[in-house]
Image (cartoon, rainbow, N blue to C red; front, side):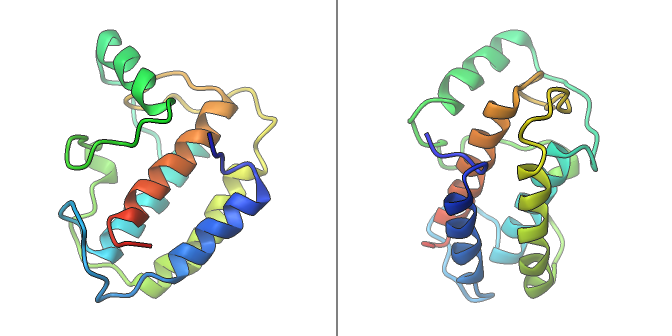
Length: 148
């Protein structure tokens, strides 16, 4: 499974993010490109502890979510709901979000050897390895919304 801790994967994601345009056609979901990238950037901020959201899911759903998320199965389209603080409902400057993305991705990557990661609001306690995989899978999911 791909991880954002691999430099080639980070470069791939940055190239794909740079292909987003305000007029990119949505393949699925409800977000516009600016909202999707703002949401991705927010998730990366959560991974490094810039945003704190308490764990708030029951253990059964957490276990089920981990089973699917950390497997090769794609994230279901239109089935997952994010935590309120990561919901992107406004209009955002897409170019500004694109500029923030590489540094946020690097901020996560440099913490690869860290052992004390923030508790994820849905998945609870995650390892660095799991955050690396989640970072790729989540970003990839939202980029696929716009065919990039």
